[in-house]
Image (cartoon, rainbow, N blue to C red):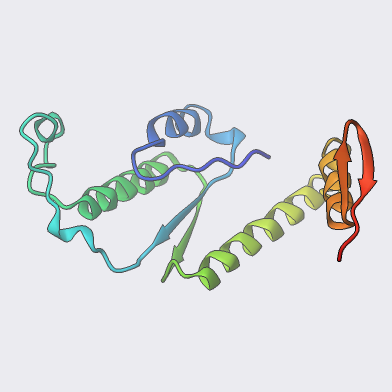
Length: 151
């Protein structure tokens, strides 16, 4: 399981190429925030770039991102590609924390269903050991750990 993130059209092309070319190898959640749109005051009026995509001139960025989101979900539905949609009513720390907790729980449950121990990751033990050492007040100096004295 490898999580990927796409924001708007920034990463969408490469990620969606993978998702649409081989829809059975990955699961996907579309996360959307319905926070107030502040960018209505900005319109795509650029004489060079705005003409590259029909329908873009005189549109606010939020309208363009809404159209992209609807285009992705419409394509998924047309092709029968499974996906989940998560709507955040705000981007405050509580909402983002709840989303992260949900994704962690999702990963643990998926791992369990696949008979994978999500907590047995021997290759990450090195950073965990270093973290425990640092939290314990030790510093690594010339490949040897020395204890610092808190005053």
